Image (cartoon, rainbow, N blue to C red):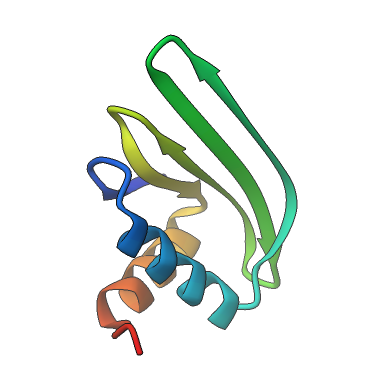
Length: 85
């Protein structure tokens, strides 16, 4: 399942997602980034006891999270309930 957390690169959404993923004990297993023309993409693969997810921040696409449906639903729930402190 793929979920678009923010329509275009959004620093606040990225920070919020980072807090949620740390709260759920996700650790980065790999990352890469690149530029093609006017598009930038950054991709992170993360793991936790919940499973493996892929997070991408891409120009014109936004901030997306991909993984098992149950993991994505857990992240969505935590993301919507998180208040930046």
